[in-house]
Length: 233
Image (cartoon, rainbow, N blue to C red):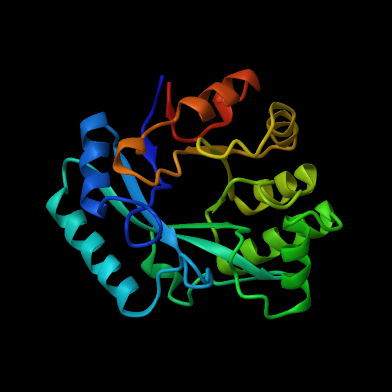
């Protein structure tokens, strides 16, 4: 049994260290079959990659895809932000990206009422798990997201509702090895509702690419290994 791909890694283009090439080389060293650089999208005021910087990143990833063809599949990803109820910064040119990850992150622009609510809740305000899950999944459906990043981090979410939507939409729930936001019970509940999972390192340094240990242990505790799509038996 081994994990064959890491689709959630960061570089110095956002708030990580090391280059996209460094992440690819680390993934090759580990024998992974695929790796994605999934930097924060432009809606994040502090870490978002936008404009010419995003164009440079995309060009570099295209070049790495060609260079490493036959050795590893290099994917162009983007970790996007929920910006309001059912809204996100998933780009209109969605088809240009191999992987779209979506979640709530601190540091988004608070341009509407719901965005202000999630800001306050993330700092200890009134919690609305069902409403939060509805917002994330509506945004995921509208933007054709592939993965929900670290469910429950910063905002409590209604796991049964999120899992039902994820199953219906074919969206994966991430067991994040850097932020174990889903408890064993959360994973068991989501699995009972038919959700599938993906393990991601959320690496912010090249050395942490492919570091799945914490997430793998959490999945084992939940007896969910058979529902993790990037595990090869």
